[in-house]
Image (cartoon, rainbow, N blue to C red; front, side, top):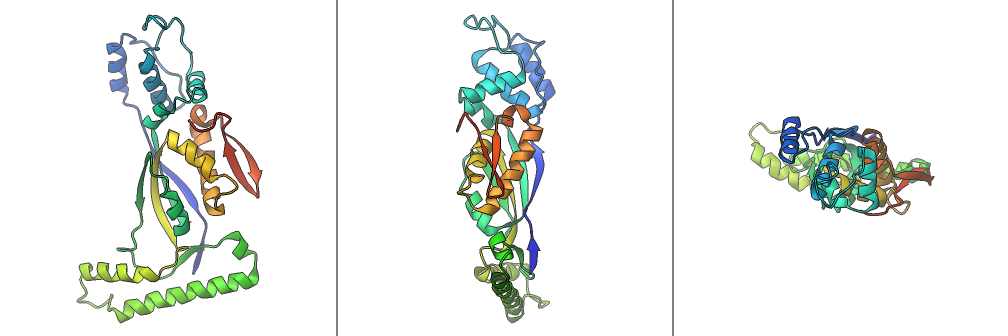
Length: 261
């Protein structure tokens, strides 16, 4: 058994196409407009929001006599007014490594505004079992011994099954290996370590952070989304800087005064 800890990797994000934005602004009659956003994503949120009201400049829309200046004030107002739809245009790509299937079973319940790709145990054969060990187990020697014995038994069963099924025989084709590996995973425990790719738009991210750092949530997912929140606040301060946190039971709980948008 290998004890693992969850790790969060941000591997991609929405990027603006400069030539396309330049052509769009010329078409809309504001070729000199620019954003002071600290990121491509926040600049795109502002662009989408302003085109809804044609509020790039005063008078562009006869009904608009003055406009908010600056990306920070503009996005802050969007969030305050709960115009969350424009936040759906931009996404961040994460990979969560060293998380359990307990975690992923809960994560995939959040389907709106997400894309998911997870390590497949139909193809990936189990040998040594990676496990996130919850703190309540780690801190109790008797419980840890029982936990460890159960996992080591699971490892032995996987290896014995592989031998009994002839997975490493020279004439075993990949198609047969796939079928047998899929059969063997049925005795794999839910707490098994895994890797999952998760992409979400900004509106969904704000929602999931509040829900999954809540003290009522499972500690593993609270930890992971505390790390997600720290990354987002640092990289996209205008879109996530309004989130505040307090430490509850040793983990951060992030909330927004605006609530769900």
